[in-house]
Image 1 (spheres, rainbow, N blue to C red):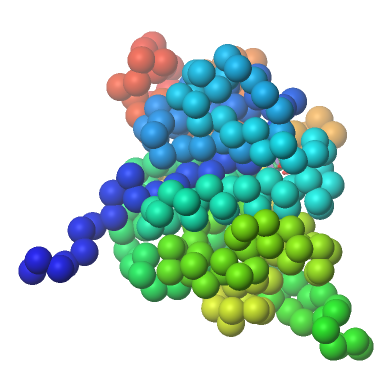
Image 2 (image 1 turned 180 degrees about the vertical axis):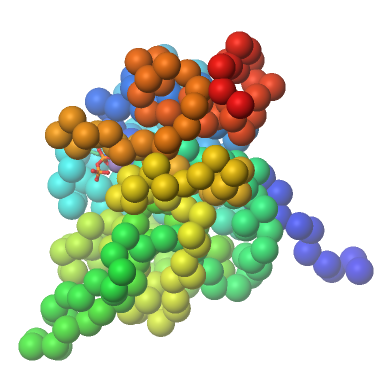
Length: 275
Ligand code: UDP
Ligand code: MN
């Protein structure tokens, strides 16, 4: 019929990547060489400093938030506040947030979001804990409150309908005020707003993977379906996908190899040694 919704397409998704100046040359260039090619127009990068060349290479999508540099709660919630404000202005159906050490499987994200109605309230992501986060309730001294949140490092998506309901606590700079009230990191604050203040629920998507998981457990035949992947190195110990492909010194994060397994016809994948 005439008023039937069109299926969600890539242009309906706002892909928001949180980054910081010191990672432009490493992490953002790696994204640029891999999955970014599949979602150039939809992806925006939120950072804390100017980088003329990178901004040019990203089609003007490198946003300097002017938030303070650093890993402080304030700096990170300031960035999330700007991400949310840009999303609201974009009028798109979905807001998807990623860290800059995430590989996004773009076609898989699209097929996931096509299964959910953006006019309903959806908070899709993967918790990093097996239990809800418990914090002291500042409004009721002596009481505790518990809620689930999607870990930012695995990526999460919020439908427009839900984002509109979050606006009183999250847009127009109010996200920072909310984060300061509960004194929690940005991804926990998102969970607090959705689960505690709005009484909506996180829908767990097992296809999202942060480096808080053991990434070597993801098997070759499962790669195509997964939506996000990450990598990390803590005190010399690598947590990366266990996949064949480029040499470790050429591709320590394994994301270039992953990209060529998923999209073998890409220019960068000529002569790719994996299967
Ligand atoms: N980040 C940031 N400012 C900083 C440090 C990190 O915005 O001073 C961002 C970084 O770009 C990434 C996210 O925060 O998107 C998580 O950082 P990282 O992966 O370094 O740390 P993790 O929390 O995963 O150990
Ligand atoms: Mn990380």
